[in-house]
Amino acid sequence: MTLKNKKNACRVLAVLFTALALSAFTGCSKNAGSKKTGKSIAVYIPGIMADSPIYAKLAAGAEAAVESFNATAKEGEKAEIKIVEGGTNQAEWPGHLTTLCAEGKYDVIISSNPSLPELCEPLTKQFPNQKFILLDAMKEGNSSIVTARYAQDESAFMTGYVAGLMTKTNKIGLITAQEYPVMNEIILPGYEKGAKAANDKVEVDFRIVGNWYDAKKGAELADAMSASGVDVILPICGGACQGVIASAKEHGTKLCFFDSNSYSAAPGQVISCVETLQEKLTERLTLEFLNGKTVWGSFNEYGMKDGLVKFNDTDPLYIESVPEEIRNKIAKQLEKWN
Image (cartoon, rainbow, N blue to C red; front, top):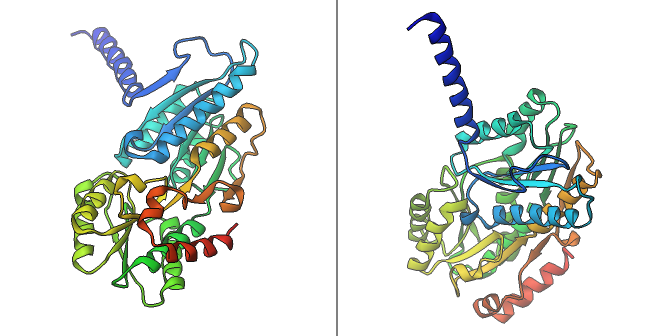
């Protein structure tokens, strides 16, 4: 092969490599293929929507905002949106985000995970025009990023309070996917504080899956907890929750949940669901962006008083699963947050 042919072959390989990189993860877009006119949004799901209601709500909220905006936008100013599922391998997330930025097509990338600010901040230097809206996260002072999170101290305290009232062994558990600042500094201490407010004899068993998807490991940890006498578990571990649920059904363990209404996941055993209204907040922040009202570099926290975090005490399965005497105590505690 001549030197010229070798150079041409290298160029072809480079083009093919770039094309493969840009198509390395799946996505779907509305108005895809059309000439870009108005603002363009990418919603990056750091996981799989089918396994995580919180991420499905993220996508739904952004889509609702785009639909609402486009209903009154002039032709040529309508927004476009693309939903990208990144999968559960966290090692791949930085590459996915870099690819989205490198495409240069998206005015903003919207996502949700406590680890995202750390991944996105270096990209704001590499791609100065790229903007990010990150939920369930905290970062202030970067003019390319806006963050928002829910009052996890409220959610953790209420969840622990219910667990403390319902335990019969004085042993409750928390299974997390990973350790991270919000978990270590807010959720775990808040869960324990709430439990002890209800029952000062309670002990908290804290265990770590190591990732957000290993249902087998989740089941093993829940089995071990049950064997040690734990009778109420709070799982915050993504897809690994399925293993925790399976174990709870086998052992009769009670369950508490963050983020969504999951009473139907194990009827009669789920005793607490604190919902974060991710769809509503995502829609609000997306509309602010589309209308040019985003305050870049800002951080805001939303709780029960804002109507974006709520303890679901109206679901029939909650009423069936939790005795009236305990529901009355929970109701009195909720009054302090509202």
